[in-house]
Length: 445
Image 1 (cartoon, rainbow, N blue to C red):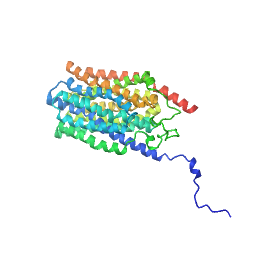
Image 2: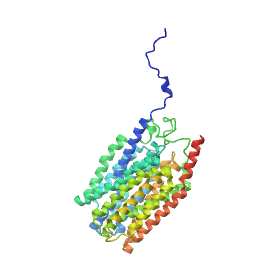
Image 3: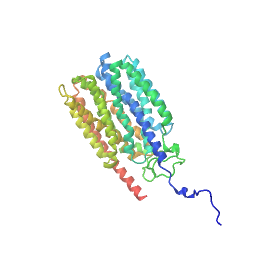
């Protein structure tokens, strides 16, 4: 008689693929953490337009000099972004995030004590962007790329909706300013940043799925526990290999740098820095003027969430749609005046938000299409720096042109031309060529 085996067979389990559920749950947590981080961290930066009129009214400084604190903020951020991206592959990304949150929150709260223009330059213009570079996209974008080997446009778009909603968070700040004053609003904003973000980074953040013995969502790499843990998660069959030197010498990197510089730096941030004051000058109440920033944020979220279309129609086509939306919105803004009503004002916010949201995601997915690999954090930081360097010029120029001409007409015209130049540069960078190469390699591997 054959002996009865009381133990179940387990040999068939050896060939079974691991369940995708753990990595999906972990990757979803990373998206949630990134969403909240971008919501509060970038809320500090995007709060400037609603603080701007109240600071002007209290101190009577010129618009150019006062707007320079925003330009300086973007310039310092642009300098620090590549450094933070480089450090993400050499130091602990979690430690960088924690340091960034503390510096950013304390700098924002300390703005409540500012009484001189140089105080704002130091606190909001220098310290806040140093913290933001360590707590924002230069660290979070590579993190998301690590966790998602496929559908990166969708993943980054979902995470960056937090950055879009930060403009809605700014509307809450405007309500606090109206009720308690701008100094109290700075204290609340800084305290909230530290109190909320420190715990979620400590408890929920992991830079790479390899750190948890997992593979990226959609990855075909069969070695999640490889000893090469300093490199990002990648699909070895399809990822382009870039060295630091070859990437820094490449034409596409600097075209993407210039594209981001013109779109966000000299285009979007010029308008965002002055749109609230412009609307108030045109006869709208401060509440309605500030609500345009909130509307912009809501529709920027829609644009970010819709960025998955770049996975279908291509990055260049998506950037074209973004440029058309922001260009038309700028034309509408140029012709606003007393008696125009709220419809064209909110139409501007809708189109401007959708276009900005599409671009904000797609430009970094385009960077990943070309440069994803061990040095992606550095290359992503360099493209982010483009926004910073352009932003150092855009808001300041908008204020200076107003001080000279008494009108925002020339400022907004310059912003519209910036969107055109941005699209041309992105098209010449041509992420489509690299995605085609990767598809060919994947099919022939």
